[in-house]
Amino acid sequence: MKLTFLGTGTSCGVPVIGCQCEVCRSTDPHDKRLRCSALVETHSTRLLIDCGPDFREQILTQPFRKIDGILITHHHYDHVGGMDDLRPYCHFGDIEVYADETSARNIRHNMPYCFVENKYPGVPSINLNVVRPHESFQIGDLGIMPFTVMHGTLPILAFRITEKTSQTLQTSHPLHSLTYITDMKTIATSELPYATGSDILVVNALRFTKPHHSHMLVDEAIDFIRRTKIPQTYLIHSCHDIGLHQEVNRLLPSDIQLAHDGMVVE
Image (tube, rainbow, N blue to C red; front, side):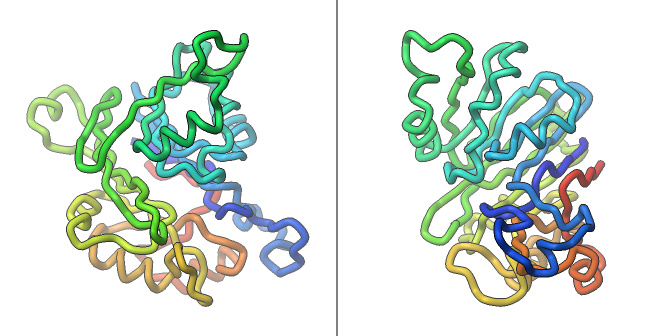
């Protein structure tokens, strides 16, 4: 399984328009953060997690081949604002999107032209698949288990993704797995078992100080990481206030890294 971070920033991205802080003025490419999105790939399956307004710029850095499924964590614009740019991928057939009921309803509302009977020529052909927490599903050789985390007062989806071969499809023994969480502030104790058991954890950490009502700070993220007992973690959805990429990584424990756009983990 290969994980590619297409974007690791918050809704404003980094640099923030009009900001003159040292992070926004940094010339280090590790400090440039597009809106959060990721690719998860095996030899036969390709998944996109979220499709924000920077999708076009992000996907141009990748080979043009079929996307087998798109996992939507929630319907906020910085996570779904690029879905119209999926049009070229209709070359491979309809686009399968997997979202909870709230996100599916909002996507239909915001992109009504994709779901009418007589579509305007050229609009993306999207199949919306409603998924529910704790009900696993399969896309190619990847098994996906959705579960719930809280983005402030909004329940959103996180995903545990497991790579399987034909043998493991029969035995249910995972070969490789990752847990992907963004925009979380809290998680119910009952949901924690769904977040554990992976080789890699990806989780949001906004900044070090100034508490936020719907996003974890770094200390809150580290506390959650220790509860999962996952051996390697990458932090995402970080704003310019978190600091310079190199300095942040010097402050973090050795098993936790601040991810950056374009980073690949295999």
